[in-house]
Image 1 (cartoon, rainbow, N blue to C red):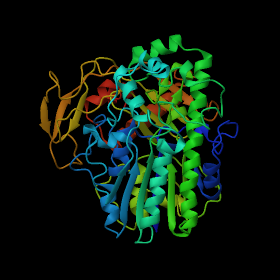
Image 2: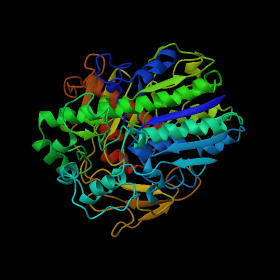
Image 3: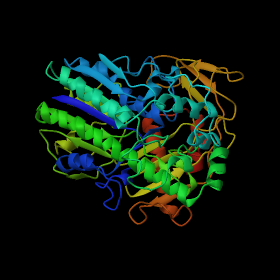
Amino acid sequence: MNLILVLVDSLNKGCLQVYDPHSECRTPNIDSLAARSHVFDNHFIASLPCMPARREIFSGRKEFMWRPWGSLEVFDPRLPLIVAKGGYKTAIVTDHYHYWEEEANGYVQGFQSIEFIRGHEVDHWKVPGDEPDPKWVQNIQEFRAAEHARQYAANVKDFEGEEDFFPAKVFSAAASWLEENARKGPFFLQVESFDVHEPFDVPEPYASMYTDRHKDEFNIWPPYQVYKDLDAFMAKTTPEELAFLRSQYMAKATMVDAWLGRFMAKLDELSLWDDTVLIFTTDHGHDLGERGVFGKQYPHYDSHANIPMIVWHPNHRGGGKRIGDLTQTVDLFATLIELSGQPVPPENRHSRSIAPVLKEESAGQRDAILYGTFGQGICVTDGEWTLFRSPVEDKPLFTYSTAISRPLIVDNPVDGRVGRPPQHPVDQGHFDSTIDLPLWKIPIKIDPRTDQHFLFNRKRDPEQNINLWDEEPEQRDRMLKLARQLLDDEGYPPEQLDRLEMTNAALGL
């Protein structure tokens, strides 16, 4: 059985009519795929953002309690290497430029075939020139580093039509890979489109599909990692600008869908649907001004944490069947390995295969799930209730890794990057009993985004507007104890219990 994993970065469920029939966004090819497949309604993030989510996919290990964005660890299993043991040809086609940054070593090296599409966001591809910045670039620079805006502008300066833009290149290259390799034996192809990620720069005919305004009028790349920049942008923005940004987000989704359709047409042409599993999903969603925020930062509301996943299996055709079981990004690891016929590594602790659900052999393997971002709070849901427990400020926080590196900290670091003075390791030891190698313990300071706690009933309040933390003490205490149980099952550094007020004493255990 061939395997295809399609990751479309930052894709919101609410943008897809298969999840929200009232959405204005047109994605007919995703709709078509969903109509023949299983559609997962309660698929969630686990570790955020981009590379933490990908570590889960590649290694089956949740990391948000242990470390931020970084390389694969030396002890991590490598998904493509495991799948290849079953005789699979393995390949990745992607424009997700973080893979070739210093802070993301080890992810793609296990594939037999690697094709990079260069130039998205701040990929150091083209050398910026000395010519005056266009108005849309000047708009970005008000709230973001000028060099970032200029790098992206240099990368796309010579683009003429949609064929030059990233989804076209990614899905065309993936289709070409199929043309050349699909008949050489079973294959695992990972296709990643960095779009619909910002900057929200879209060519025609998509740019004007949902608006009659132009990018020179607005900031197409709002800030969100640095709190003060986000606050300044939200204080200045207008309803017209927010509407334009949402229009360009939808335009990107429609563009991705169009080129995904061409890729799916190649599966038609090569008669691959009858012996190929296709998983379509994302790493996380992206808030677009809701609650005064952009991006995918904590607190992790369903608007970006409850993400789309559609699964086609030729032997278990869903026909649009809805799956309500709780699943997470980390579950892709065990799922793809099981579908390849290989044994899941015995040391796997966090990943649970969804294959039995597709085969209707059993219900889902999760009664509740835990998710979050390193240095922030924790989130737990049992499907009906969702709780966010925020950290106490100025409590000790450490990263744990076999390497001393300079990972990208994307959540408002106060004292710089890990590995820079004065943040030297304070200890080394076997802090994680599931790992047979010592880890460096390195202090890090990250500002919590909030110290407020939240409790929502997802069934009565699907938009999560009504915080019931004080009004529902029994449910609050139950969910706190459930979160502690999941923490105990999944593992954590001991100081995390103190900073999250999840100790036995705090919970009355």
